[in-house]
Amino acid sequence: MAGPKDLDPSSSPRALLGAELRHAREKAGLSQDELGQRLFVSGSFIGQLEAGTRRMLPEYARMLDLELGTGDFFERNCGAAAKSQYPEHFAEAADAEARATAIREYSSMLIPGLLQTPAYARAVCRAYQPTATDEEIDAVVAQRMARAHILDDPTKPLLWAVIDESALRRATGGPGAMAENLRHIAELARRSRVIVQVLPFDAGAHPAMQGCLKLMDFADAPPLIYLEGVGTGQLDDDPTLVAQYRLYYEFLAAYALSPEKSLVLIEEMAQDYAHEEQP
Image (cartoon, rainbow, N blue to C red; front, side, top):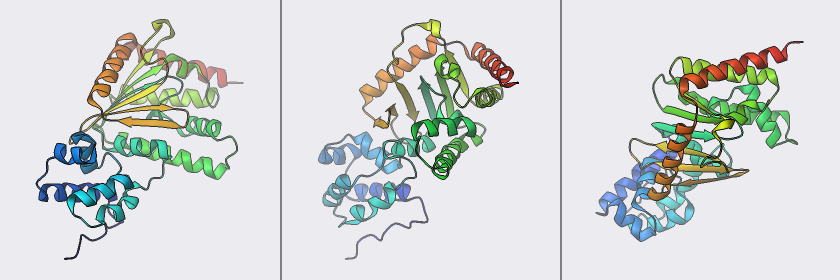
């Protein structure tokens, strides 16, 4: 009997692959937890594969084909579903971000990517890749700006950013770029599209001093935590770890200035940067 056909590359490969996985699992009479046990992963991981919030890696694809009797369907198609325009360490997080209903992010040294303007993003990308061509930098900036289109929807996803004061004091791209970016953040906050809090220097020690974190919630899948370093990133669904970092984020929000006071500070700093830019 003929096996399933290859996925249509014109559609969303990951979503289609997830739908096929759910169909094959239910046809086999297995719950997400039962299938996860056979693959030595959690049931929530299977749920995220089905929802399209996690990429199906080749080793899991082969095991799924074996456990579900699907020939080589998942192995053949996981490559198309894994393709991404983003760096390997961030690809899964970017895809999850686009499907999230709520994103809570703490950023220590730079303005979060979803809140960056082109000039600021270009300065960041150039710092990361000092020998890249202008065309390569333009492509990365365009990708980053495309990610921010999820904020075009007036109500979702919820974006709640706690930004360290050091990220706002570091004149990335020069005073003009900083003034523009801070005004952009203020405009989003004033029309209640995002929640932004500034974690001031005088807050002292806090739970996320060693890095950045991003919590993502979904309508049809368990929450994820994304931790990022220089050229590295870790996406995790472990409930204990997610709960731990959710508590950290609550502490950060408690230590930070209120949204109202944060907005005042951001607008004052934007004005200072604008005056600094003048001859």
